[in-house]
Length: 320
Image (tube, rainbow, N blue to C red; front, side, top):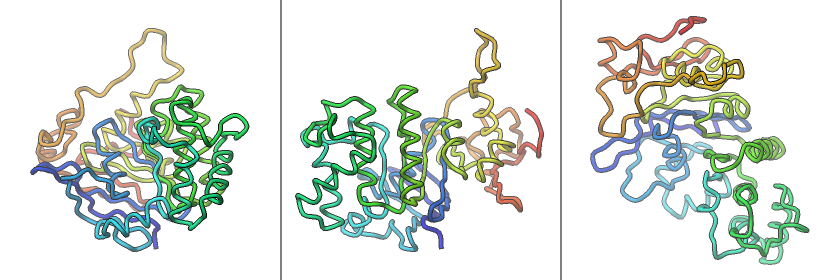
C-alpha cells in the first residue's frame, strides 16, 4: 500500500474549477516532485493534502494517507495527522512563523501535542531539533523571536517545526523561494539529509526543474490545474514528451549560452481558472496544437509508467 495516494483530486470555488483530476502516488521513503509555472495549482494541491484549504474551496476525489481518506476526515482527525504523520515546509518562513512566540515555543508545540512531552521535555526536544537543523543553541537561542533571525535561519526553524515529530511524509512547498542562491543550496541539502536520516517520504513542490532534478526520483508536471506529464525524473527530464514540459526544459538557463542572448520562453501566461480553453488547457500556447486539441487529452502511461496528456506528444528522442 502506498503511503500517499491522491486520486481524481479536484478543487472548486464559486463555480470555478481550480484543480481537476490530480492523481499522485508516493511510497514510504520515496520522493516525488511537482513542477510547473506559478498558477498551475502546485501549492493548492499541497494544501488539499494537508487539509488546509481556505474557506469556500470544496475538494473532491480522495487523498489517502496509509489508506485513510483525509478528505473525509473531520478537523479533530486532521489535527492528529498534521505534524505527526504529514508535515509541511512553507515557502514564506516569515509569514509561516508566529511573530509573538519564541522559536523554541513554536518547535515545542508539536511534540507537546503529538508526543505527550512535558513542557520541560518539549523544550529540550526543541533545542535538539533546532541544533539538528543547523541552529547552534550557543549562537541562536530558542528564546529568540523570528524577527531576530535571518531569512535562512527562519526557514530552518520552519523545517524544525515540520520534522519535530518525525512525520512519515514531508511536503516542501517552494522551500527556497525567498532565499539567496547559496542559502538555497544549504536548505535543500538539509532537507535531503533529514529525509534520508529519518526515512521520510518527500513531496517537493517547485517551479525550478533543476531543484526537482536534484531532490527527487519521480515527478509530475502540472499545468492549469492538471497533471500533463508524469514519470521518473530520468525519463521525463531526459526525454520530455509533452510540449509544455519541453518548453520548460528549453527555458532553463544554460552555461553554453552567449552573453546577451535571450532565453527561450513559452509565449503567453497560464490562464486563470474560468479562462481555460476548451479541451487541452495548453492549446493556446502550444506550437503543436491542432483541431484534435479541442478535446481534452487523457493522461496515458506507457509500459514504463511514463504518462503524457497530449494528442501530439513528442516521440522518443524527437527534438523540438
